[in-house]
Amino acid sequence: MELSRIRVRPEQPRRYFDEAALAALSESVRQQGVLQPVLVRPVEGGYELVAGERRVRAARAAGLTTVPAMVREVAETDVPLLAALENLQRQDLNPLDEVEAILTVTAQRLGVMQAEVLPLLHAQRRTPDPATTAQLDALFAQLGRGSWASFAANRAGVLRFPADLLELMRAGKLEYTRAAALARVKDDARRRILTDRALTENLSVRDIVAALKVPATDVSQLRRVRGLLDERRVASLSRKDQGRVTRLLEELERLLEADPASR
Image (cartoon, rainbow, N blue to C red; front, top):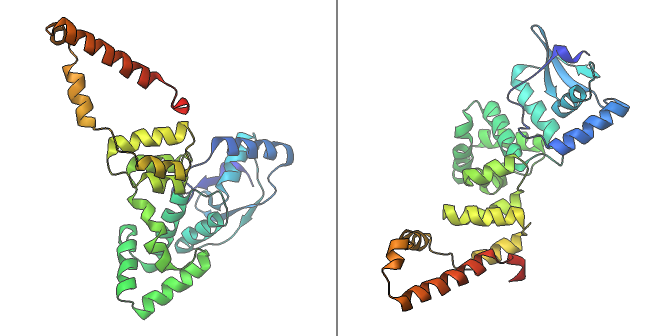
């Protein structure tokens, strides 16, 4: 099928595509072609992609004009489920995209807004409605992602992570386990500093947990000291106190410039 006739749905479950992995797939496609057909459904003016967006992207990057495609009549209400199932079967799906895909499918299956899904699941855990729980049991059996109660109690908690961590997870720069450890840091400034360390120093979950046990530097104190470091203020001190300030600044400079690995 001609690639120009295939359009991608904006609600695809996979939001992030690793550039290196996509480049590798593109090279493979360039040499061997697309080995597994994509799934499309006929719509007005062409075809809509149901599953196989990575293959479509890789084929376009490789300069291909056609891809093998399986055409199936799929109802609008069934497209999210088929797309989610195809993506959930892949091991490299971003955990955040995974949770959001499950929420999208569940919302559509139950006929509610996506924002209502988690409150509904929690309500079912407290006061189950047999008809609703039967729907949920059947859906999560199809998705192959454990029970809906476990999903609500554990996996869906990722949505409560701070926005900066969610952004890194969507970009594939931070996996769920380390993000969960960092999300325990409630102070934004401290969390961002520790997140930078986790990325640049490749800290493990154990390293992050150990760092959390170290008392945080009082940010407000740093700001106060920074405001006091004025040349005129220092010049007004006695010669003895000026010498102490100089020695303290030199010690502080050495400490901050030192390689963290050497400490």
